[in-house]
Amino acid sequence: PDPVVSAIEAVDPEHKLKRIYLSPKGKQLKQGLVEDLAKEENGLLLLCGDYEGIDERIIDLCIDEEISIGDYVLTGGELPALILADSISRMLPGVLANEDAFTLESHYSGLLEHPQYTRPFEWHGEKVPEVLISGHHANIQKWQREQSLKRTLERRPDMLAKAELSKKDKEYLDKLKNSED
Ligand code: 4H7
Image 1 (cartoon, protein in one colour):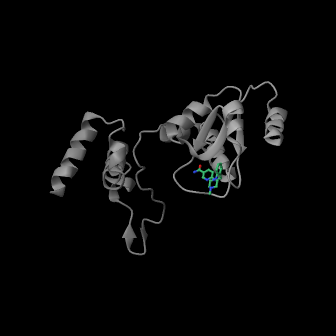
Image 2: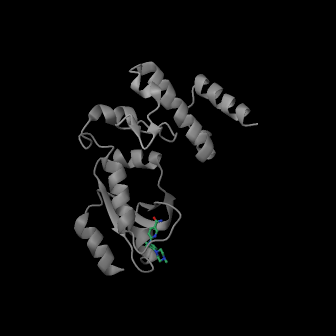
Image 3: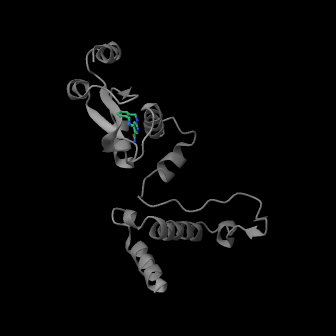
């Protein structure tokens, strides 16, 4: 254990950083945890294990939090560390080019995102939905919200239980569910 602990202490001699170990048996990374970690004032220390991981006593004595990026096996904790760093850095002020896009789009609703379209209007016989080129902002927002709800119901119904849903959202979902049967 000594070389690993020497490395940790060289980086963070006074234990000012939140020390995180990336491992498959950690707490699963979710957007809520990303947002909490983004608020961490002093920054993070990310420790990556390779081969069979590290001596459990290092985790017991030196690590604040053990995190997994999901239920699959990798050869090392380096890619999980990069994924964690990416998810957190996009929450920090000044990282995304468009600050407005940051506040609007990354406010995490707990729903899947609606489809996106670019130009041209028609491509390989496929058209962009008319409402999106109408210029009618309110109708566009309504369409996008409904697409998010529809996709989440179809692909990740488990997410709906925790999502922030308005009365209108719930009415739309009921309509979809009733049209299924
Ligand atoms: C720490 C402990 C993270 C790091 C054990 C790391 C998946 C994730 C690793 C291991 C990781 C994740 C030991 C797990 C050897 C695989 C065959 C490196 N894999 N190993 N096992 N999901 N691998 O965040």
